[in-house]
Image 1 (cartoon, rainbow, N blue to C red):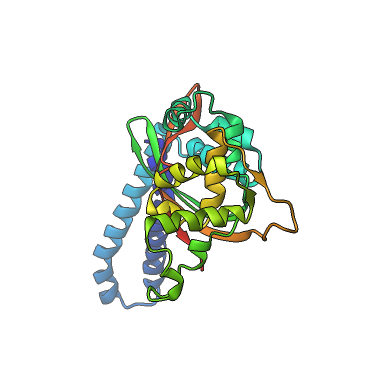
Image 2: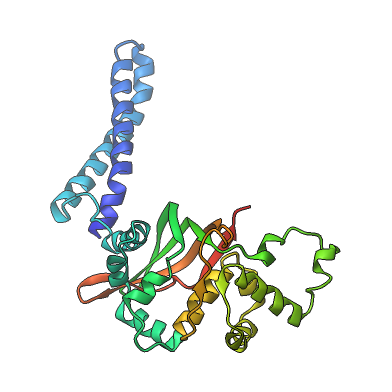
Length: 286
């Protein structure tokens, strides 16, 4: 209730100011108008005076019953903004602590990694080089939870994905003559991987199995190679990076993320992220 009155107090004062201004104008006009015309303004003056009195009374009563003050700071939104800011400045411990215990447990189950923790969380941002255009918007309250929408741009350095790099080629291009079947795509991705990492032959079955279990959308992701390497490492397969200058340069990828429904919950006396970061819309800048 207090928050509601805090939000409407400015518009109410503006209305009161306008009514007061009208009253003053009517009063001043009475000095210059003939008597017969002044009589016609009396009814209008009475209405304006009554409205001024009613609004003033309502504001005064609200000020006594519910002291008007600036709306309280949205602590849940502050925590969410701190999460993104901490990642930006690479303070992953703070960001990790803003994840709820329930979300961390879900992550361990999703990845089948019972010990998933701070290091694994930090590894998600190894290639991240910056972010900007952050916007967090409060949507609604659901029970005791608070729901937000967030959008931002992210810059990543990642091994160049040959498939993604050729996404603007025409479908009729001879470039695709040799790869438009599953086996050739597998070989193309592995050859792409070998540009940046030493890939032993005995690791190929694991790598091929990994690619087979990805969606087409994942394979087309501009950072697919770096994501694959990180996932394989978590699964126990360590690939050694080819040292510079033999290794090609990484690409700088700029992407726009939108999270439509981020749920913040109160846990251990603090606001933390329960869900919504995984469900995102991603656009890649040209």
